[in-house]
Image (tube, rainbow, N blue to C red; front, top):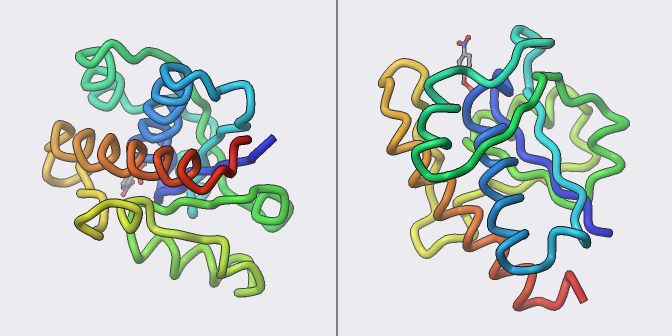
Length: 154
Ligand code: 4NP
């Protein structure tokens, strides 16, 4: 079993979108039983809240449905996941600060697996959930191809 966690700031928009998109892609590829997939925030500000409705809407437009309750990532979480994929560089900085820097090597930026390394666009102020979806989908697809190509799921 390979444990994969997606991380953003609040855990109500981008990282739960990534969790559900990646699960959908893994199911389509027939490898979901080999994966433990979850998502977290670097902050506890949204803890207990569900996925933000505009994020659910864009997911449903792509036939993806699910739910998630926001939670902050803590040191035991960082220890038990094999891959921790942040949406933005600032998520990595904050997470490394929160957990003391010891596990920095397994904290990766999602879209660094794509041909165009970048942050996932933050939809919170722009309201552009389509752009966030496209970045996350691109990153999740590239990351799954990496796992399969590197035989991490065999
Ligand atoms: P997320 O989006 O980090 O993708 O879940 C945000 C949620 C809340 C805030 C910012 C981004 N906020 O500033 O409250």
